[in-house]
Image 1: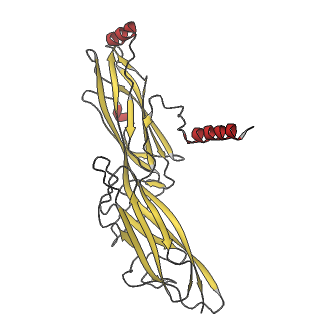
Image 2: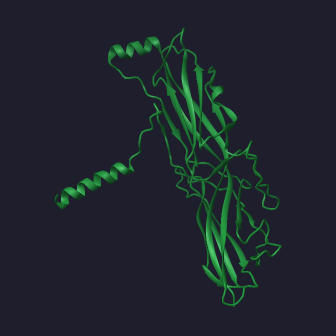
Length: 321
């Protein structure tokens, strides 16, 4: 095989590998905008090796790479690890230095996502912990400590879309004229929890004797972190509450739907306490709608609210001197 043919084949493989794979259960696809929310773009130390009783700095950079605002006091950065407890005041191995008196740091501002209309960049926040390495390490020996940066925050993912509803007469007229009916469409904001909405049949045709269609709402954790119920965590850095009940708050989201006037049945796809099993959950409901004279485009909005945490690690080796 010559080189040109080989390069062409490689290009085809690469393009195919980057293409979105259709999901078999989606009949009217939700257009996704990615899986990021509030993320750590950096978690690192200013050194990887240090002598005992020396200064070090741990840095976490946080950016809103999703599609929802994180209000002030709805996010909390926490420094944990093998040498850190829930406070630095007790001088357990590593101790606070200078302005560092706590493992908890807030954002101190609303964290806004990228604004495409005004072309305003997403908000970022750099957080630093200034520390002193442990004492009492014998000369010629060393120990490696792991630092874990964890970021807790509240977030939401929103799907908006149009569902086209046709009368039976309008649908028959379109078929007779060889016209296609408009397709339902849904667009999602980005977030670590993906939200998909579908309507079946793809063309909603109703009559006085049959004016229902089936709607499906699917939720999936795609961000690589942990989901929990909003309200489970208290984010105030001076009095945080990070206790999450595994049975009632872990892997829980809320679903809220705004539908047109006159619609009913969609509330069966709502939930204040939907549990994700293996990272996913699906709600299905039969929606009843008014019969239009001809056709109408009905706007619908579905929102899932949740808490989320992600974490990264860094390490420092401390030697005695």
